[in-house]
Image (cartoon, rainbow, N blue to C red; front, side, top):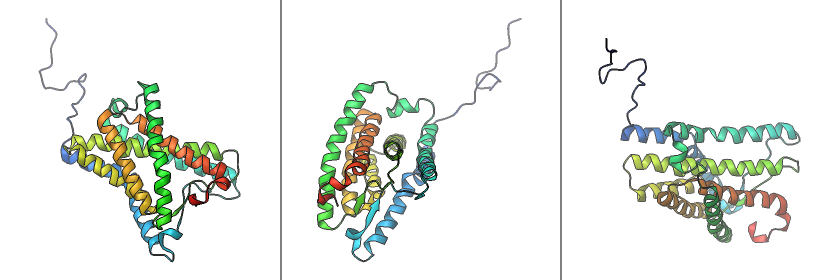
Length: 268
C-alpha cells in the first residue's frame, strides 16, 4: 500500500509550527520594549541628569561628565571585575535585538563580515567625517556655556585600563549602532514608517541619550545620528557604523588617558 501522507495544513511530528510575520502593533510594542531596556533607559536618565546640572549653581557649563571612571578605587582587581561585568551586561540588548530579528539577523543588519575591507574603509571614513567636526562642536559648546566639561576616561593607572577603554568603546558602538540604528530602522520600516521618520527618530534618540553632556552634545549627536541612519538607509550595512563609532570612542577614551595633560586648553 502507498504510504500515508498528511493532509495539507495539518501539523505532523515532522512539520515545524508556522511563525507568521509579526503585525504592526507587535513590531512597535517589541521595539518599544527593546528601547526601554537599552538606549531608551539611557535617554531618560540623561534628561534627568541634564535637568539636575542645568538647575545647579553654574549651570551646565560647570558640570563635569565623566564617561569611564573607577568603580572600586584602590581595589584594582575588583574594579576590573566591575568594568568587565558592566560591559558584558550592556551587550545583552544587542543579543536580544538579534534574537528577535530571527535567523539571518546579522545579514539583515549588514554585520555579517561579507565585505570586511570595504566595511573597514567606510568605517574609517565615517569616523573622520564625524570625529573631527565633533571636536569643533564640543569646543563651540564649551565657549557658549551649553556643554559640560567631558572627561572621557578617569581610570587608575593600571595595566588593564587601555584594554578596558577599547572594550568600552566597542560596546558603546555595538549597542548604539546595532540596536539604535540597525534593529530599530529595520523594525520601524517593517511597521510602515517612512525613512524620513526613521532617520529623524534615530537621530533624536541619539541626541537624547547624550543630553547629559549638554545642549552642544545633543546637537552634535543629532547630526551624527542623521548621517549614520541615512548611511544605513542607503546601504543596509551597520558594520561600518560600528567600526566608525568604535574608532571615534577609542581615540577619545585612549587619547585622553594617554595625553590628557598635553591636550589644548579648549578641550577643558
